[in-house]
Figure (cartoon, rainbow, N blue to C red):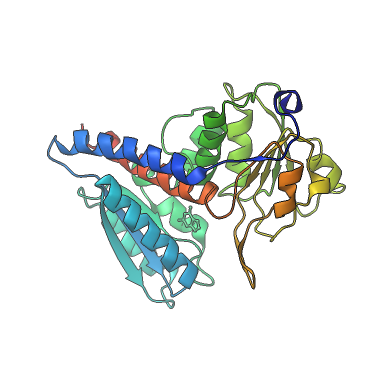
Amino acid sequence: MLDDLRPCVGAEIVDGKSLAMSIQSEVAEGVTEFTSRGVKPHLAVVIAGDDQASHVYVRNKERACQKCGIMSTKIEMPTTANLDEIIEVVESLNSDPSVHGILVQSPAPDGVDELQIASSILPQKDVDGFHPINLGRLVQGYSDGLLPCTPSGVMSILESTGVELEGSRAVVLGRSRIVGMPMSLMLAQKGSDATVTIVHSRTSEIESICREADILVAAVGSAHMVGPGWVKPGAFVVDVGISRTEGGLAGDVSPDVSEVAGWLTPVPGGVGPMTIAMLMKNTLAAAEMQVS
Ligand code: GUN
């Protein structure tokens, strides 16, 4: 168990940013090798509307592409864009052989069904890993292929610290399609072998369940919701949440959890950069799948 591994002397803050940079360097090497065959990996990002945070995220993705040698194209659409118009753009990217990865930035404009957008992207170009075929492969136990970037990034963070998952108790706070659900599957799948509990807004005694976790992944988007009383001494706490507050960016985990946890991922500088690194990895993998 983790509390045997890590004495409680204040959490080690896990540097997601430097891990992400080293993964991006590996991707850049792969891209160089791939490009020598005459084709450059190419990511297309569709963004509809003027949500400022989304524009910042998209800019960060473009920068990462530049660093890795991946070509990127941004397609901007107005806030008034409807489902049919977005799907029309996706379909033209699906049939463009020079595009290997397609991502439609969330949130979509009000009233636009993101599930239908996810289903419209060709599975082999679905670098977000949200297409039902890619999520279905994860349920079937495949750990290769295009998997959702944020939970993949969390798995990579856990691996990098050498923490033992087999036999551990993991609690995932949040049941979203993008993070909570795929995260739970990855932690439970063969090879990871954690015993996973998912808790959410309707769970009773949520705090005491979280306190049993060796690995606690918080992914609800509620600033500083997880306090020290939610955390088992020595636990590995992964903070996926990111909220804008008057005091700046805040994770789901209160900073004083660092006095109880064994490991803690910071916000910013923890999971966020890893999500982008995994997107770069998926884009290269998608290009490799499509160009033989
Ligand atoms: N918005 C916030 N995170 C993500 C993500 O991982 N993918 C997409 N498409 N949109 C997002």
